[in-house]
Figure 1 (cartoon, rainbow, N blue to C red):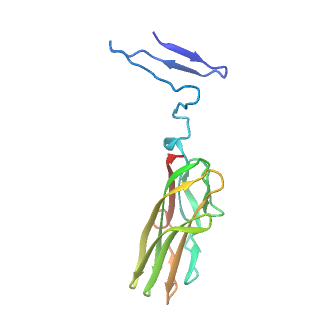
Figure 2: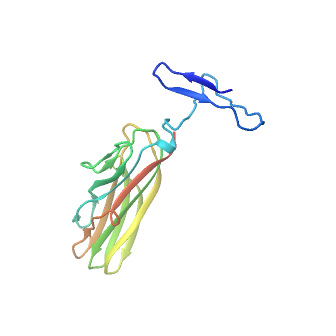
Figure 3: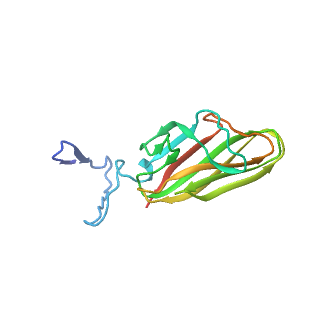
Length: 183
């Protein structure tokens, strides 16, 4: 026999008996516990975004330059700011973050791809390269975020004797993160 619980808001929860002769036990936590559902803010429904550079950007030589990620592919919780180029999640937890920038240059160069948290470099990838049409690398990290004031940004450093360009496009220069585990 099914058990149906009705709420004052009009919704309901139904617990249906199993279709086999086997017994099943449902154990709920005491009044200090938490029952998770698909509506809860756990990793399965936490903030996630993917955004990319909408038009080519010219960085300042030998300077960490914020990559102006300004076009969203998706942003499940509206936590990515396309004018400040930063991600400020609204759920505390551990976030998997990655960033990729395709950099064009015609001279030997030193490149650094870096993830910044609250204005400080927390993860980077360094490479020295010979002349090539472009170089495309990814920096990634698992980062704790407090869910209120912590934010992430993507920077690149380029040092070369010729001009460099951050190449635009969803497959060339992008920034992504998702909640891997709530705190």
